[in-house]
Image 1 (tube, rainbow, N blue to C red):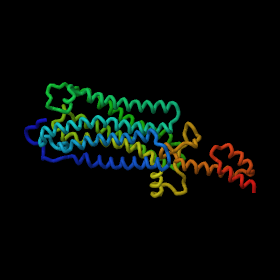
Image 2: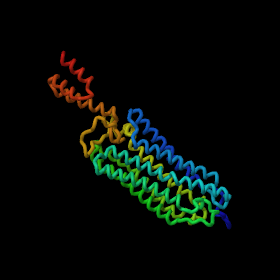
Image 3: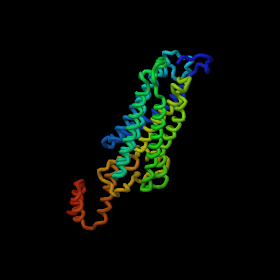
Image 4: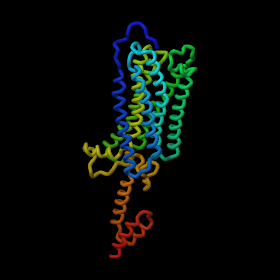
Length: 364
């Protein structure tokens, strides 16, 4: 874009408004994802679809951020008045590419949350609902890419302002932006509200239930970021902004913030152990109190093969075994005949050592 007339301001850059908060959130996302995967591996749990999809979300968002950073040396964040036409073209080209993976980064972070909930919500209605939410996310990402790739004819007119005979359908882009933005806000609020359906089942003090609710409230913050982004999107664009290199910074910043908050929201619920340690250090959880867990509202039995998949709510495999041993010990103490104990243990598939011990005691 060839800019003439009076300069809009000093030759300065506002890129710091983008890099500061975004890099901070990237570091937090990377640390939380590393903690999540480390916790899974140390607990000898198999990685689930929720783990894989959130890792994909961070990987894709990193690719997106790479395209954004590649536009900085070409004048992104500066007034176009001071940037050469070739640099403006290259920056616009890189920003066009950055939009392609962005939608999928947001998509996979929400899909990860849905898969996480599927480990806990096992009734048919909940499974149908959550799989429908996954389908909506995939459809939203695909539609955004289709609109972007069909925005202009030829496609290069989307970023090359030197093409004057191209035909661009900016109304389609605006419609897609508002539609997908509305879907993003709605899904963030829905995922944030779902824990309300089982918070009452947590057999823990009120303070812990409130903390769990606050953790899931990150989804509400993500919805706010989506709404802020939509209010800024109207200003930026080939047909609206006279200084896109400068005006795009806030829009890009809030877009990446939305993306990273999604990754954080998907990771935080799975960090039960570090979360409990922090609560104990703050005095909110006594050392003598057991881990946080939930009995399924649709199945009051806790399956022994459950690997604590629901993150902060479910206990780990080790916790499961410890709890089963405690229950068995209480059962033994209530019985007077050791032979009865042996008969009960023989019906269990995983009590060989306990059977041997009790048999020895019975012989004596």
